[in-house]
Length: 437
Ligand code: TYD
Image 1 (cartoon, protein in one colour):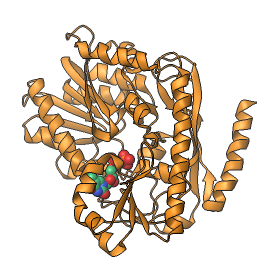
Image 2 (cartoon, helix red, strand yellow; image 1 turned 180 degrees about the vertical axis):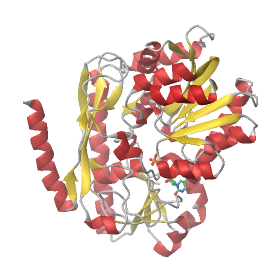
Image 3 (cartoon, helix red, strand yellow; image 1 turned 90 degrees about the vertical axis):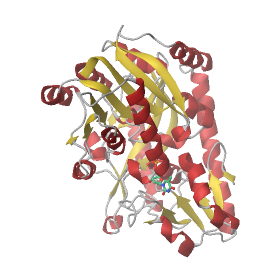
Image 4 (spheres, helix red, strand yellow; image 1 turned 135 degrees about the vertical axis):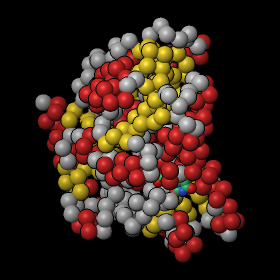
């Protein structure tokens, strides 16, 4: 009965989206009934973004006039363990076969990954005979640093186009999803791994049991698995809600993750905070009983307990604030448009596409989005159909305002545009409340 009502709601919403994007059609999705971390069915809806196209579904000019698939974007929390996850998921093949995200396109990210590799080599005394596996290795930016440091490397990534780029750059990369099955194949071909890195990929993996069974299979008996991901507690504090989208199916904290790991006889022995992507944590994992557990792990668990990650109140307050931010953003942009100001976006990010579609902004209000990723340039943003151009077009575009759709790299972007800011370019930061800087 409830499902029928949800389908009716989607149809009504699709009709209204078609006024904004006549090519919009419904895509296929599956409803998630069980918590990915603790396996309970105590999932509660708290936030709706409505129907959205795939956030990385950039379009070619020819595809602008073809049907564009939309999918529901609803978010649940688990009242048993505090996991936050999407209510509906779409097929991983649909999301990841061809990918436009490239780690090397954002230089702060390149720097971040370089420091991470150096830290791991030093902390775990890695040497040439040790194998490092990077799960979701993208274009090999992280592995290339391990390679420079003389460590044996292997990547695995499901995006064919990206794996090809990495292999061409002599970063050995298997083109596949990481799972229990692919882990067994890697064990046969390469042996165990001293370090397994999973950086900004955990949220993209729907089946955690297959993931952690794979880690258990491949991890050397004294090895470390490092998982880095945007931290739910930071997202709850900063209200940067646009990191919740079809690829990011989970918003994770230490408590639910530790429950899922224990099912596979793995445990967290250290946690470290990093400001990247609005606040992330690095979680260090070993086989159970191998390493001394750092006191920091309890500090994180205690804080999660204190703020109440399984408590409905925090999520209802969060949702109220999200709708407020959307309304403020629409109001601010409408007032600028009324003053005939030229507005662009800075960074053709997946998160920016969530924000733009949630606010129902399109190419009429936002004339272009600049981005440093060569594969995104010349394409159009999903749903909103805004042309993506290179940063070198900025002066020609001569905008009055730029929305920081890559707000996570605000410092780097503001620094490189210092001269333009002096000449009058103004940036809009969407969070914690839309503000002209
Ligand atoms: P990211 O925030 O990682 O994206 P997503 O939300 O898709 O995960 O990517 C940042 C984007 O911003 C990336 O497409 C490159 C772009 N970018 C610029 O265009 N200029 C810059 O100076 C920086 C740092 C990033």
